[in-house]
Length: 137
Image (tube, rainbow, N blue to C red; front, side, top):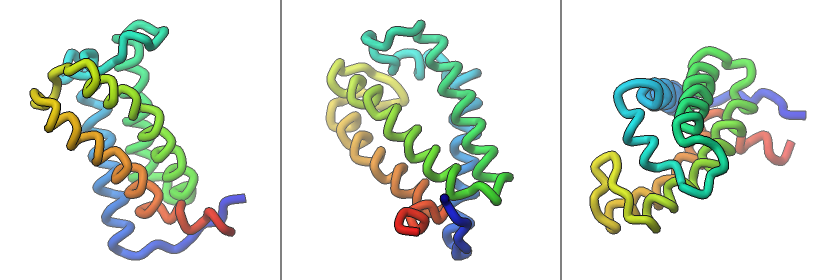
């Protein structure tokens, strides 16, 4: 069972910032950056690309709102967000391998640098929610 851990003010701020980023990213999936996100859906995904974009946007909005407002479940939300960041990583790898331009990433160097930041998102989600601290409890 995951127990609730008290988090520091820096973790609280980090959780709020990550929540806002996720709500913004999810909203952009459904609106003004939809085609950019569609470009990132790997061809091997067995669903329509637009459906993947919409579903991932809904998940991002849900995770972001949970980070912002569902503090009693923040550790579980942290684990869910970390898992989400792991699950979307193949799309980022595909963008690199297929040399797909999106989000201003118009070179393999920039796409490669982006790959390095995905683990940072996983760690951020686990740290800011106190989820990492629940691992051994």
